Image 1: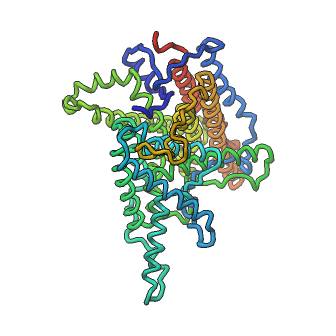
Image 2 (image 1 turned 30 degrees about the horizontal axis):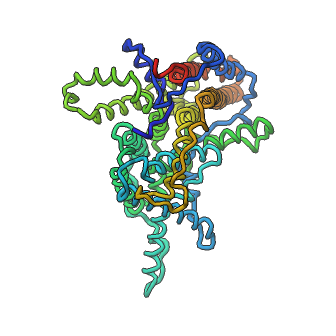
Image 3 (image 1 turned 90 degrees about the horizontal axis):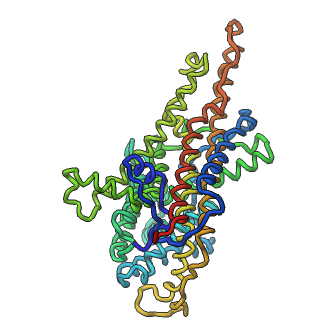
Amino acid sequence: MPFKTPLGRPFFALLIASLMGHGGPLFAHGFGERYDLPVPMHWVIVAASWVVAASFLITPFFKSDVKTSAHFNLNLDASIAAFQAPPLHAWPKRLLMGASCALLLLSWSCATFGTEDALMNFAPTFIWIVWWLGLSFACMVFGNFWPHIDPWMGFYLFAKFVKDWLSSFGHSPQPKASTVPFLKWPKGLGRWPACATLLIWCGLEIVYPIAAMPHRLGLFIALYSTYMWLGMLCFGAAQWRAQADGFFLCFELMGQTRQMILNSMGSALHPEPAQRFALTTLTPPKNTPKQARDPLSTIALVIAMFTSVLFDGLHAGPAWLVFEKFSSHLPFLKQDLNGFLTGTMGLIMLWLILLLVFTLVCALTLRLFLLVPQYKRFQAQLNFSTLGLACSFLASLLPIAMAYLIAHNFSAFFIQGQNIIALASDPFGWGWNLLGTAHFYPDITLIDAKLTWYVATISIVTGHVVSVLMAHRVACHYSEQLHALSFKAMLEDPTLEFEVTTIKPWILNIPMTLVMMGLTAMSLSIIAEPLTNSLSA
């Protein structure tokens, strides 16, 4: 399909291929330019792994005082509740949201009524490249500004404004009643709808090639818009976005990760207690609805972000052919000629594997607390659990997901994204030249294999290093909790014959660091394969 990313080779492709005895080369998504590395590839892998290891080795020298240690908290509910619709006098914001609504309407019109050639239709390039990749990169750099340009929210607010305006004739206004949702969010549902949204989006892009079929893309826009507006109407806009809007939550997670990194850098340069983060991932905010307190669904949502990046490379690589050959022997897949059911099963399996790996790492981290002689004495008061550790370490996964998104889609955005200049003049593919740019041709030399390799390498190594440092700060929090509790117990009962006990943060961070080192080595080797080997060889 024309919108495959040029560097989609996740580590699972190499892992599965090696486990199945498959030694074939892994090729890129149509990126056939060869680049000779200045040093042997294994040197690069070893050096990158040691950079990640070095970031772990220096963590014991970081100050871990409870007053300055940062416990990274993904407070999605509070950030969503804080968003307010722009007032009537804020015409620039309303104009910006109106333009976003117009682009959504244009994209649906082009996909529905325009040419079926995806390369000549405005909708596929705008949605998959400009909106999805461009907005993701923008949220990493500038923070999450999607709430202010969300077209589905824009149409909803406009419809609500018209409704309130019409109902004001002959009746006293009732603003409070108009904001009360019809239904309460089902208990235990959590953010599973948002997680499902991201997985479906990934499946539509890769398994079911909707990007190459504009008419089906138009149908998806219509169905998703209906889904969004009905959800906002039934459950309220704020509650719906907090629980079911996968795109909003994805952009919000990227924006919060950016802010965490900036705050952490500021805290390191100016270590003042006032600049530390708010502590509580284990305890949700008091104003959070009880129905929203489902940590497992939030963990699954973050893992779905990983899956959406990694599955593209797995599905396009030789390892996928091995998986298809194996799965074809299953009775319920023998009639799956198009591979849709097989692809869906592979997507769900990858998501479950990633979720299982992260859970096992957190379970192993929890076992490390048993190294403390007096841990069992305070176990009931600390109330540590695998799920609690997973919630706390969850934010440290996001820099890796963001790094993979950059590494796998950097060249696609800057090469394929140039097509929007020509498509803006002829959005329907009917031979128009509205802006005089219909004959613009992308400069394919703008991003070469050398630059792609350096960007991918730097982003992957940097993402893993930042994740190691973030995980260390979370480990500091748990170490300080155990230290403070044992110190308090000793003060309350001086007859206790034991010293103040705790566990070193770097010990708690060992399982996560080992996994990150392995991911760094495998991801770099996978990315280097298509760039350092000729496709014609």
